[in-house]
Amino acid sequence: MCGIVGYAGTAEAGVQSLDVVLEGLRRLEYRGYDSAGVALQSGGELVWAKRSGKLARLEEALQEQPLPAATTGIGHTRWATHGGPTDGNAHPHLGGDGRVAVIHNGIIENFAALKNELTADGVVFASQTDTEVAAHLLARAYAGTSDLVEAMRVVARRLEGAFTLLAVHADVPDTVVAARRNSPLVVGLGEGANYLGSDVAAFIGHTREAIEMGQDQVVVITPHSVEITDFDGHPAEGKAYHVDWDAAAAEKGGFDSFMAKEISEQPHAVADTLLGRTDAAGRLVLDELHVDEALLRHIDKIVVVACGTAAYAGSVARYAIEHWCRIPCEVELAHEFRYRDPVVNDRTLVVAISQSGETMDTIMAIRHAREQGARVVAICNTQGSTIPRESDAALYTHAGPEIAVASTKAFLAQITACYLLGLYLAQLRGNKFADEVAEILGQLHAMPEKIQSVLDAMEPVRRMARSMADTRSVLFLGRHVGYPVAMEGALKLKEIAYIHAEGFAAGELKHGPIALIEPGLPVFVIVPSPRSRDSLHAKVVSNIQEINARGARTIVIAEEGDDEVVPFASEVIRVPATPTLLAPLVTVVPLQIFACELATAKGLDVDQPRNLAKSVTVE
Ligand code: G6P
View 1 (tube, rainbow, N blue to C red):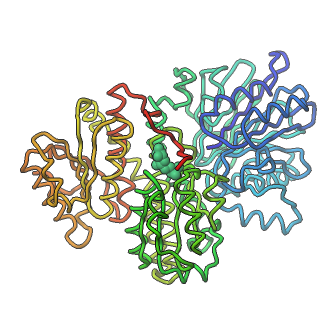
View 2: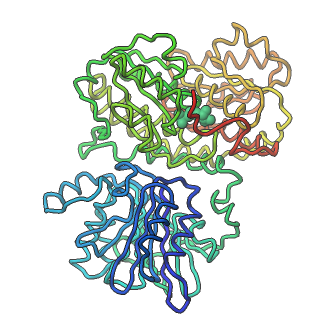
View 3: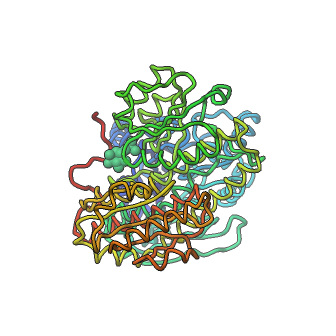
């Protein structure tokens, strides 16, 4: 996710805003980014610099062409969403006559409509970003009001989606104005200086007194004041708190590990991946998907290629895609794909899923697919990376950068993007009526809250994990969409806790794995909703009985109110009721937390497990 810093200080303090802003950006580097920029207000003028790549590139540019002294400034590290990671798309973006500069974190959902409106009015855009829309709107609103704070409110009221916006104006000294909705912003309170940041790491070197902004609020900071209002100008309050983390803990938002933090970010990862996908009439639109609709109507097979966790996301997606679109869907590990001489042709849609976009096995698979005439759609978390570049189209997940090697929030975002793709194809090919698509989209939009409710109830799972640090082997069972969830649960445990773990299809139990069951062996069972079809639930309950009868420790993940599992369960972990196909978004969460907590209890480096790399760029 983008990093944001704002600073308003005084000349007496002898501090240069550029130094404060760059230091803040360095502390936010952990968030991951692909370009960086700053804008300073200096003597009635606005000066700025921005570069793609790492902060060092920006700093080199600033050394070659230094900016004048200034005590007010904003800075940004960008994680590309709209438009690739280029100098031109880097923030800040300038509005109107170049006297206002804006930086932004989030996704402006209605940017296309606003851009059309501005273009029709003669505005020429210098970038492909959604942010630039806000910059031009702000310049216009300021021209009308000569009040930067009111202008920001006017703009905030017009925007839909998620945004943290910061602005400085050439005419308005000592002032940074910001607005937020569905995207983080904190205020740092200093002596003769105040700060803004996407999190406290941005200003932890200067102050530990902070205010967390509420939803739909505008804040204006000067060296000696902080004023908060709602979007209509009514006075409002944030939540003041003292930060007692050190800089390293601040980066992790107070969590023990990036993995724990990323698990907690999953409701946002799903919500952000869903943002901006419907038009005014409520129809699903995938603007990024530039594949000829006629072609998509005529595909007769989908092949998902991916590795590791991304492949399990594909395995979940398969159930939804086949059910909604009635198109055969295969999932293949990318490194196996081309060696078996797969039958793909110009009626095959290959879906490549990758968090990093740089996994060499997946790159080779899509090259092979394209040589055979297949169309390739990438589902990817990293703009401008190789896999989307080499694909015919890309559908981006908006999980934000994932730092922990073991994938968590990217997994949920990948599943979400696959659902969107499946629904889009079903809509396009007429397998689902518009109202049916809208109903499922509504169910998807309810998922972030459900994921949050699971996260909020995880203390018993953590306790259990801590008590199991000596465990040698754990099994995971699931049926239907619970099967790939079981595989993912086992993978997490192998990856970070170095415990032997296996995921099985529950129906396969009696064909072999049941021989492994011995008294006390922990077995997680992912139970489908009792409302699911084809006696799926009853079959899994039978499986639990079978392993319970052989003395296993049955740890059951079941829907609230599902009492049939209770007599055979050593432990029951509850998840809220969800539609069958969407259940993996909640059932995997306890498994991630179990692995993370157990590995932490073993004293292991959860974020950097031995022998593993985040991005595997060799075959
Ligand atoms: C590596 C990582 C896994 C990841 C897999 C695929 O093995 O350790 O966490 O799932 O690569 O990565 P990708 O970036 O393509 O999703």
